[in-house]
Length: 192
Image (cartoon, rainbow, N blue to C red; front, side, top):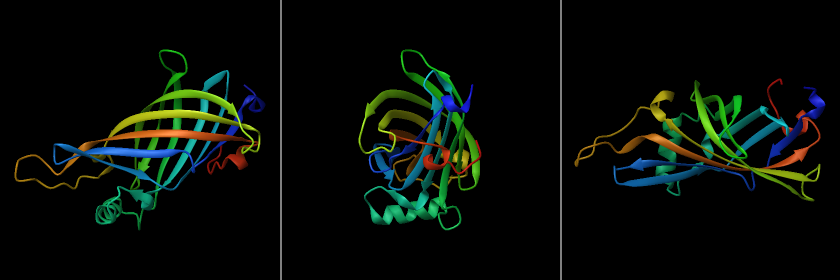
């Protein structure tokens, strides 16, 4: 496939979101988000399995609407030493039903890289005046990761039994990406 068939997209961080939730005290969930991130996509409409995706998340932008907890999470993530969380797709396969896909890739947290799998829904394209190339793409993705896989093992036992923080983190991503002219404008930092 020629590179000319590929289109390039830049994540619009003003409308995209990276959210997470984790069980707290066995009975409730703590929800949060990352407020700063950049991302680049490249793919051919007729060959989505050739997609290239790269997302850089500012680990210090974690926000659970509790300043004390956010500061503890920044320490937990080691943001002074590891300021960025990175995802790079390695494989995309077609899923069941319409515009659904399974995306595998490498997620790096605190300098530990593990393979993760996301269920992705392509929600279509729309015309827009705010994109350099006049078009935007919409996607949603979900995954669950085990924080222990990334060396994030801290926890505390609670009086009623069990632990303070669950191990499984549910991640939900919504993407609005604007079409751009080339790889550089998309914001890729790695070689294609």
